[in-house]
Amino acid sequence: MTTVEEAAANFTAEIARWREVRGLSKKALAERMGFDRSYVSHMESGRTKPTADFARRADEVLNAGKAIWHLWCEYETAKIRATRPASPVPARRMEQPYATGSAIVVEHDAARLDFDGSSYRMTMRRLLRNTGTEPITRYLIRISVDRYPGEPERSNAHYRAHPLTWDELALSAVCRGETMRWEAKHDRDAFKEVWLLFENEHGRFPLYPGESVWIEYAYTVGEEKWGSWFQRAVRLPTEHLEVELAFPSSLDPTVWGTETSMTAEASPLRTAPTRREDKGVTVFAWSTSLPVLHARYRLEWRFRAPARTGHDAEGVQVDEARPSEQMRNLGIVQDGAPILTEPARPFELPAERDAADQAVESLFVAMERVAQAHPFAKGMGIAAPQIGIGRAVAAVQPAEPGAGAIVLLNPRVTDVSEETDEQFEGCLSFFDVRGKVPRPLRITVETTSLDGGTVTTVYERGLARLVQHEIDHLNGQLYTDRMRAGVAPIPVEEYRQTGQAWAYEP
Image (cartoon, rainbow, N blue to C red; front, top):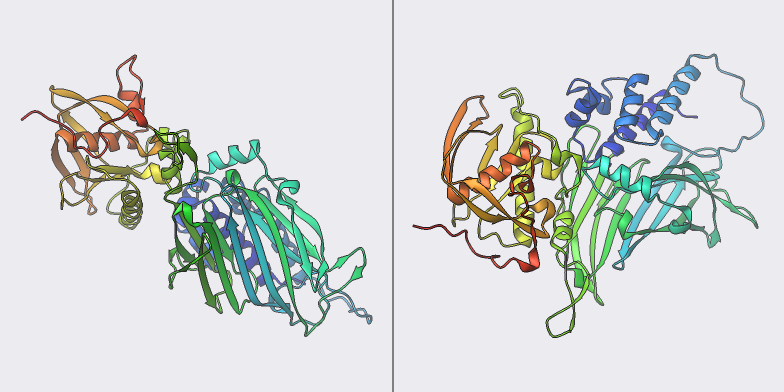
């Protein structure tokens, strides 16, 4: 029977899991829910107890399909049960349908994700030990996907139109060489909870106290429904956890990871994933011993050469990648996401200095990933909305070798020159095209420093263009809004200036 403490821990773990799935920080979730910025942090750490209002709002904002609400109901039930007088215990032995807390230990948790270029196949193997006093007859598993992390509205719309189905999942499970039946607990468009039953048409094979047994289950998800991430959540005491990601070597994959706990924000994995080659497949492996309960380990990847079939000028088949797909794999929000057309919210500085620092760090990490995948002879920039952060900050890397990056906090153009020119621009959020955009050759920009002061800077020519492009993003505008009437962007294949600096007359 679940205790109040266990039910509260299950509830807060579910909040943290969905928050991570949606790519939101604790502060960002609190703001979307209309709570004080520290409220979610206090909730996840256990300093604040769950409330019905919080559960309803969190389930709605995170689009959790009532999963959060159901766990709050279980918490309320546990509280009511705790206040009732103890009932006499029947003398006969009662079978426990599912053990929680200390009743079950995962001695070994091994996950392997295989990608064949069109679908993902997940195989989970767990060595379970019953440390309780009653037989275990079923085990709860979860299947959760998010195609566009950081873009919840887009993901929700995607799965409403293309929900996960049981037929495509082709879920199978075995124990002791026996097929396990299963029952759906929650069936949502992008989220499933399933009971694996220690039984089949031939009989029952419960996990008795003191016994250990391997179970294995597997399912398939198409590439169009799986995001470029995989997360392991520690929901039961676990002695060893390992993950393998196997991708075709021809995709030139790269992998990185983060870990979070009930009391800490996301940070890099303490040990790096290892890499090995195996007959045309690149396998990344990572493991840890005695992970903290409710910790979450998230591995992310990108394919620097996605498998797309095309032909070169001589008709020879080659692999090619659409630039927009490259950027999506790098975590750049793509055109069509509402966040790209909404004005970003300014920072209140210096009060929000920590939030500003965190956003700037996220921008620099994204810039580094993008710069590794594409040359930018004209310089480059990224605005916070392009990585799913709706705040008024952008970063610009000038084209000149050795030039430091420019951070634009709460930027505002205060003056422009009458002299203009028209040059091609590209945007990471729709990188398949380039468009000719007229802009002033000189601008004056006011920004806010971290200590709350105002800084005024004049930018000219190419740098002025880069800065204006990013400020437009923060105002909810794209460069196509600036193009002359009747002029359309051209496909990147027709663009002939890649690798060249912008040209200006002396």
